[in-house]
Length: 97
Image 1 (cartoon, rainbow, N blue to C red):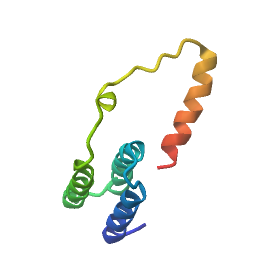
Image 2 (cartoon, helix red, strand yellow):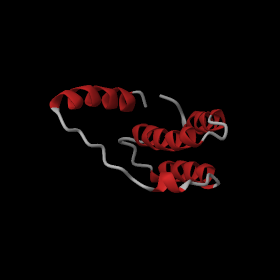
Image 3 (tube, rainbow, N blue to C red):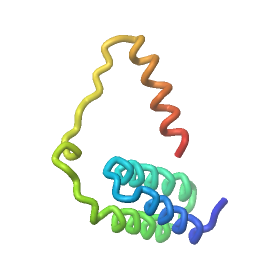
Image 4 (cartoon, rainbow, N blue to C red):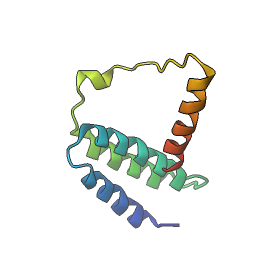
């Protein structure tokens, strides 16, 4: 398991890789929070989790949302066939964090 320093460095390196691509920044934030939750799972020390979350939010802070990104849209799945296609894609996406 990596230590806190390596976690912070990986977090920052991943942030730099997003360049200033809008979608990449949003995905970076979501993935970073998921990685943080996995990294601190079962760890009673709240300071690291709190500080890492602050770092994520501060790095993300200067990113300006477009009006389109502020709206949420529901995914409509009308048939079992669509569900069978979408669910494995979503599972694969979130397992890779």
